[in-house]
Image 1 (cartoon, rainbow, N blue to C red):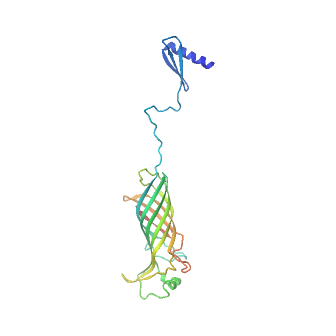
Image 2 (image 1 turned 30 degrees about the horizontal axis):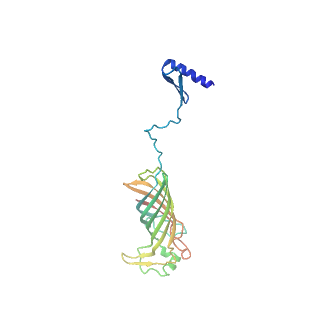
Length: 269
């Protein structure tokens, strides 16, 4: 009853001022009009929509959604095998033991901050030793206890591999929708299968001896890999990586010591 009386009073005051007016109270708007047919005052009550709706010609923008996509790249890399002079590893020469790779990388972008990926590549390892022929077990197992007939220039262990890896990528900065690279961190694992491996002694340019003891050299190895990328150097996308092998390259039943497990390097995409 009180509400009706209030509305009626407002209507009478409004009619005395103008033929039609509006009074707003909160979310309610009161329209007061005088009809020509009679002196009855009509009061119309309209409630504002909350929140306000768009007009007929207006469309609200749709919220942005992330569009998943895939991306492929080829890459080449060069790495240095880090010497380890501990009692568990054979000594290698600093800066002379390298790892080279050439292959393809594919990433599956599942979110603005997250992706999965994998690689398939040819992987080459070259370990240059320091006086490994003087190690008693290596001398007896690999060289069959026979000394070199002449002075040698170098002795190396080489492995030609087919490698696969899988990784999880975390973007440290947002990734644009056009696929431009941003700073990221990859964490994953890599498996190498040695198609061809041998220990080689080089005397001259063409004078070499090869020792292919398949019992002493393990064909399959698994490594953990970490990579920081999305960095441009001289206009090229680059990444820095570290790879740590946690399986033995040499059969520990045949040879008591192993090859150093850590490799660090740079990749170019």
